Length: 108
Ligand SMILES: [Zn+2]
Image 1: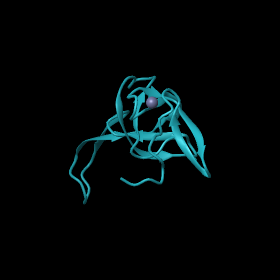
Image 2: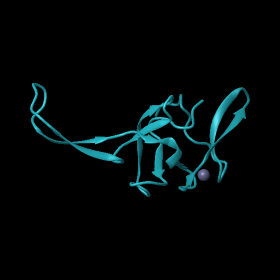
Image 3: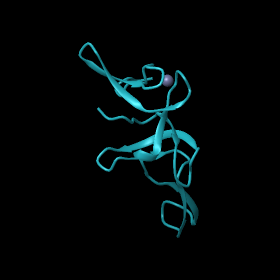
Image 4: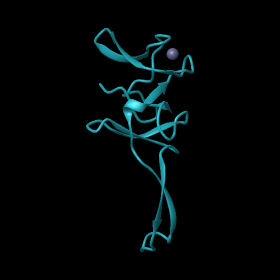
């Protein structure tokens, strides 16, 4: 199981966007990188193509997971993710308050 999943609320702990918060849009497990909405934005100038007009596009680039902390929905603090076995199911927990985080297979 991976620590991060799409939809998690996270906070950037280091680097250019330190302190920013956002939701995970994409997870790249192999690279240990995630894309967070509105964070690590780069502007790119694009020429006109058939599908889009010319202009400046803002693209969220992947961030290393090592600089990002999950915000616990229970205690509201940036925290580290722990794992716990509940019967045969492995669940993600907040290391600060031991509260359960959203589980990867749960749907809203
Ligand atoms: Zn917590």
